[in-house]
Image (cartoon, rainbow, N blue to C red):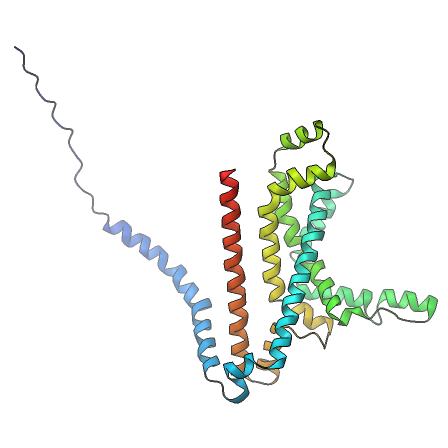
Length: 292
């Protein structure tokens, strides 16, 4: 009769004290939190406190029910939406051409589009003024032939929209080009070998893969155009009053800080709502792609 001796259990390491590691992680988290509090939280708190101290036409009810606020809110919304649609359409076209229709100088064009991202927005407006203004090059050329200067759209909402499309289109082109660069060419070759037309390949193969990048670029453009001030101010469009322009007028020109704080709070709330909607849309698109 044999007896089986149980093997001794391997020695276990003594429990380690992880408190120093946690303290180190907490210490690393403090500087970013301090920066966020200083540059974001504190100004928001001061802005809310300033908006609550208004009297007369500077109170929340008076500002939000005023005709100038409602008109500027509608102007801001439709200029931002129209500019975003224009950027998405033009940016998609340029991205497809640069990525799938190679031509001499395509890299130079792509670099020029990237350069626009580094320029301030008012430079685009100044260029438009020199080209399409009342004394611009185009009007001067037409006046030399016909004696008239017919172009006066730059000081209208359409001039603002055209300038914003010109400036913000690269924010759509760059994400799309990045998405096209990592796209597998096998699907394109298979679709082409099966006799699919270029438009059908674009609609059924290319764009579904690039949809998250397009949604990201379009959402970014919508946020930027919603808060754009420089382009509207430099076009000299006196009848185009957006929320940023109204905030500037209320706070700097008329020194109505409580009323400007109310408008700024509304502007921040709109931006946060749009950002939340973008994050929700992006999460759903990512989940759908993972399931597929």
